[in-house]
Image (tube, rainbow over all chains, first blue to last red; front, side, top):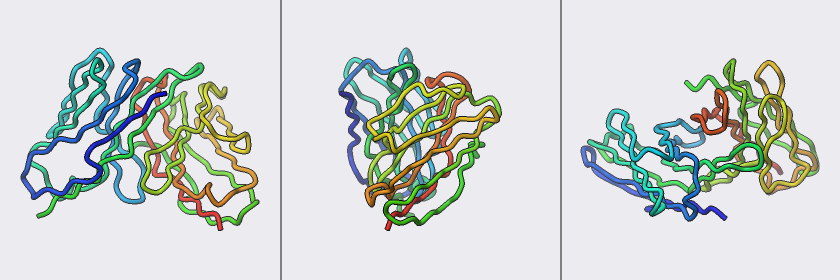
Length: 114
Length: 113
């Protein structure tokens, strides 16, 4: 059974700091991995999708890496800003029945202090 | 903006009642999935539809059912509501396969009293 774990559960950093969020998964037979951002009480915003054959993806100040063999992904945020404060969720995409599903971690709650 | 909308935004029901939640995806999004997110938890997969056919279901009882329509809208129906059904319900859609980027709606907050 696939389990996704995110560490740390919460993180508080001063503005301008570079930071890394961690995601680990127990079953390497994933199809893709996707990082999301969720603001309080809101839906999920997709940040980056990494295909299983890729090692990393970049978008602006965000860089996500994937190591399937070790069951790990990291999300690197450069020069953090107060607007980055949110919960960050990673999800692996698994084949399931005739389709597929996302299996989420519990998220890392990030607070960036001015 | 993901182009995925959900209604209503908030809903309050009492135990034993039935509820229908709605989702409208972008034109061309053939796959739609529904997720339940309890407070402080990651979303849990309920089921998925591809071109109006259910093609995957998570560990939810049969009182959770769904429909997908040709106009790229979908519904989640929950019968015999229980207190534990209180959660944020999210729909997600993608262009083709479930392996494409999933675009989420803003969610419906359901409270069961």
